[in-house]
Image (cartoon, rainbow, N blue to C red):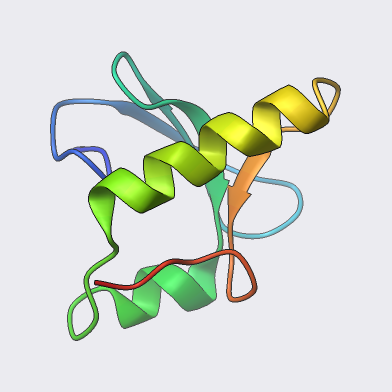
Length: 76
């Protein structure tokens, strides 16, 4: 599968919280909700702002996985 942000090859697994855990060599590891995944065909994410947000999430809470959900998604 490809990363939902940068579209390069990435690993994906189901999350116990719902959604998918993505491990991308460029974007890092993040959780993306099923709600956001369903919206992607009609609403693309803003690549650079989303990556910046994931980086901020990792810095502010290193014990939690960065997430893209309906509250954190930055649409193009």
